[in-house]
Length: 128
Image (cartoon, rainbow, N blue to C red; front, side, top):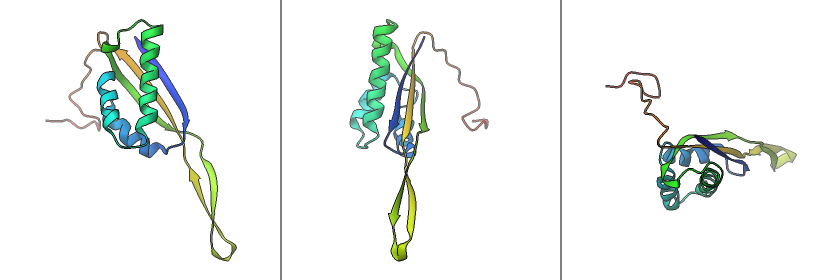
């Protein structure tokens, strides 16, 4: 059974959030929370909040035990960007974007998840 949680418009660029998301992908929910507590990055806080929200959804709405939860999918997509300008010499401006992120976490219980590891890796090449 799958449980989802979303966090939208986090004011951290998606590239920075994905660095931390790659560390906790496909871990158990408890292990992910322990890892995020040790990470010294700003993106760890919104990821931790989203995982806790997904755990609460699973425990209260779906009646799944917290110990059985595994992160099945973790997506970090680009949110809206605030367009800003930096003044420069001779009356010119340099535009830049303040980027934001959307975080989606899908948890599943350990019992229903079957190991679907193919002989090919993520890139599709055969691994020996």
